[in-house]
Image (tube, rainbow, N blue to C red; front, side, top):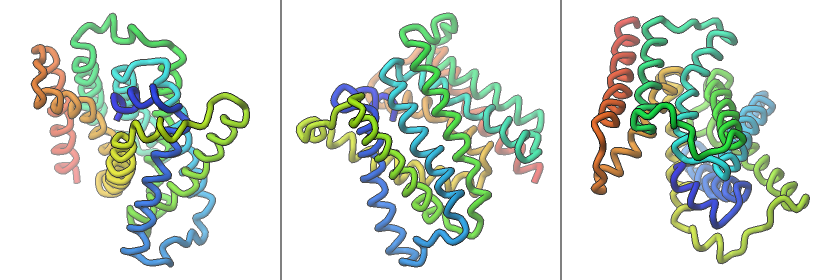
Length: 280
């Protein structure tokens, strides 16, 4: 997602990218929800305000902060900063719900993050954030915090399917993106992209809508429902490893330290999963 977004930002601005990404994705969500659960599934009932709050924080906040931040930093930086979602989630669960993670899980979190850093930096830790600006890194980190907040939304929507919860939080999140885009255009901060610019990244937008929004967000929410927020965030550490695996399949060669980092991430995820299964 991050390498593709970085290249797409050369053609359209961050606000338009986030808006188009979710408008297309939300159209798919709405069709699926109507077909599978019917018109009644679009009713919020007493959960309208929680849906608005989590949708605006998670969908609007994440997209604006991360995509705009990518203008000033590198995709590798974003991958490292997203890995910090795991300890942030553990801390949030501890502070908000009193769910203190086991020491073993804390250890797995540390090992997984260390593995991500090794994979992305090739072991050159002193140069981990070289080539990016502090502003971009801070914006991406704030976007990661927004997504951590969104990952805790599941407890507020018990009884809803993952598809319904995802769709009904994406609706206010998408509206928030539209409003933010309109404000940015009205203030002269950005310009409305031309049809030619949008058409030039049609396959990227198709990927964002069907892949990173529909499959990504829906799969994430379903994962949180079945695995819990902390275990799901541990799984997110596989994202940069997955990117490297795809590049390897395309012929890229890796250094031993990168392979060692990937092994650390996968090992930590497997170890924590087995530990949680035994504990339960």
